[in-house]
Image (cartoon, rainbow, N blue to C red; front, top):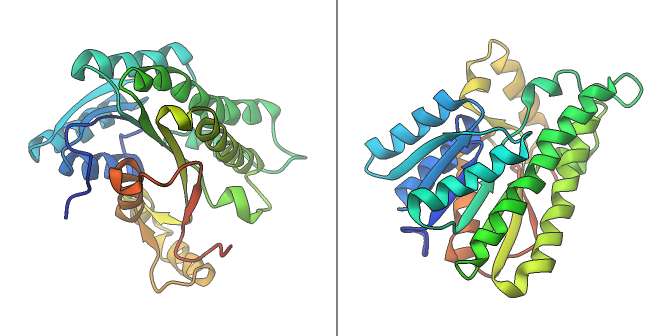
Length: 256
C-alpha cells in the first residue's frame, strides 16, 4: 500500500550514494516522489538516481559536500531549479572516515573532533538553514535527520560521533518548536546496528552480526530497508502528527 502524500513531492536526500540514504531514495522513488540525490561521492549519487529512473521514478543527482555551506545551499537550489520547489529533506550524510580516529576524549586529535562536528552536525544545520525558507515558500515541509543509537547508549569510543548525533536531536526539537506552527515538521531517526551492503561484504561480517544479535531483543539485525520504511513514513502524510521526535529503530537495543 502506498504512503499518502509522497507522490510528486520534491525531496532532497542529502547523502544518498550508498547505504541507508540510497535505500531511502529508492523507497521514495517507488512512492512517486521527485528526488534530488546529493552526495560528495558524485558517481554513487548518479548510480542511485539512475536506478530510480530505471524503475520508472524521477530522480537527478548532484555533487555536494556537507562541510561546505555554499555547496549545501546549491543542493537546495538544484531542487527548485529542477522541480520548481522543495517539499522535504532527508539528511543522512556523514564523514565516516574521520570516525576511525574518533577514539576517546583523552586520545582524540582535536582536528578529528572538529571535522566530525563540521560534517556530522554543522552540515545538518546548513541543510536545514537553506531548505526551510524554500519549504516555507510552499506552505510548509518535512525534514528527517539521521541520528543514531550512539546518542543514547554511551560507548567507550566515538565520543565525537555520539555528541554530534545527540546534537541532531536538539536541532530537530528546535526546528519543530520554531517552525511547527508554520507547517514544518522535523523528526530524526536513530538506527542501531544496520547491515548495509558494505557491512555485509566485510570479511568480519559473521562476527559483527553475532555481536549485534547479543545486544538486541530481535531475532535478526536491521537492514537499510527497515530504516528507509520509517523515513518514508515520517516524510509522508501518514506521519503528519509526529513532530520534534527522535525515534529509535534498532530492534529493541535501547528501551525507553
